[in-house]
Image 1: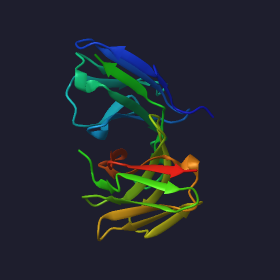
Image 2 (image 1 turned 135 degrees about the vertical axis):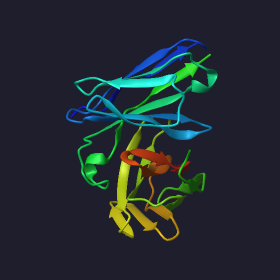
Image 3 (image 1 turned 90 degrees about the vertical axis):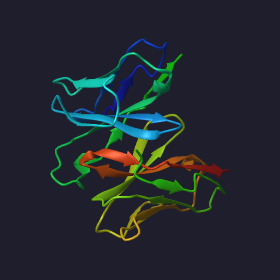
Length: 119
Length: 111
């Protein structure tokens, strides 16, 4: 069974540009979450999508956006890039249908990440 | 913002030794999870412990949870070089799939 696939794995952009990252979840997983990882702030939640709807959003500016398609694939976009946006962006998928917060259906499977460098 | 802190920040041990890392969190939780991250890669889920559980085992992993102290510990027994990685605790905040991660412990196991 294929894991979570993120593309591209590495990319370099300059300030002011925009970037789109893609995530293909595990087959059958309908929830996709995005996280940003930096040395200074650690792992921070960006947003979660389930059934093409944004369900939760972290404390990030509006320059960070995302969407989910009918096949559960997700993209996130960062506009007007700043130096501080340099980070490892991680996507995670889960079945997302567990009724209990402790259900295994909510356990996250992460992709290998997209490493963004902003110059 | 991060839910809690992990300690130590870095730990270096010899192969065969046990490694213990600790996590503290701030708010009430339904469960606490531990993840491993190899250098610059994605995270791998290791174990989930529910708030009504005190201890849980999975292979060489032993996790404890003390909700009165808002703390958890992860013990890796008989460490191997392949255990070298960063270890993070995480707790759901709001949505079960919105995790708040600790700051992580970098474990180095020397052969």
